[in-house]
Length: 76
Image (cartoon, rainbow, N blue to C red; front, side):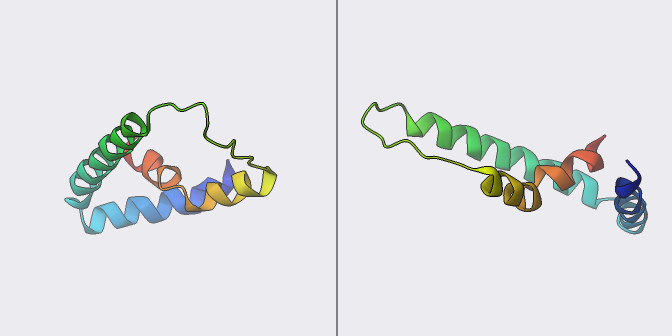
């Protein structure tokens, strides 16, 4: 929990400097979520598709490139 404190302080100071950016980020985040939902819907299901094997390192790296890790604390 203590590792999150510097990030939260940065976000608070950032939002104080540009208060309108939160609404923009919420709209962009919402559009991105709709885009992801559409991609999942469009993908459909096929039985012949090869299985994708993911490992520890793929999940570990995903934590650093996942935009929701940064966006979630800003909307709470």
